[in-house]
Image (cartoon, rainbow, N blue to C red; front, side, top):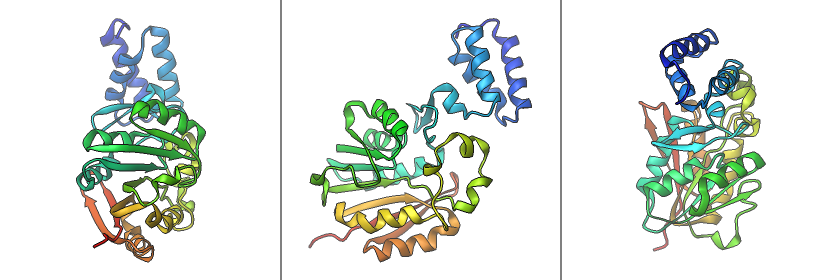
Length: 264
């Protein structure tokens, strides 16, 4: 960190952030100071944050499961609560698992799962070109990233072979999108937030096709809101998957797991 003197400028930065409504102003100020290579760069970073850009877009990265992932402007920011989904996926993943990360955004979920499990193949895809570019930087040599709608761009050789299918689908009901904080509503792609009338439209599309791609005993994992979980369970059951609901009170996270039948 090359901005000096740190004590005076840090307190000034924290004050500016607090006035802009940043709840964790002191913590954010420290991160911005660490990121800035000069006083002019610090001013530019603070100006962007005060203008309402998500901190992760200002910094260019987000922390997820103890690792920093590149997050470009306009790309969905991975939420801390989604760490619970990855933890559950890691517990389910067999040795040498084939993993698919649908609606991958930055690619953080798939990479974090690969870090936590014995992953043989990692495939990720997103419909947003900006997300695909960002995910390719994060995934690197760990796997392949494709651009397209849900399963459409995946190679056909994956059909019936996927052990873990992560689908961080949007699940905010359309009518509630305008109630989201401006950081999400204005600066993240709507396609990553809007889940349709009851919030489960994309989940229905994924669940309906997932059995074609899952290996015997493979699992689909998605998030949902607490009020949506009963409907989400029925969606998974209707698709021929065996549903389970997992909840983290600490992270306010609800994860639905739909498991394909094993061949006996």
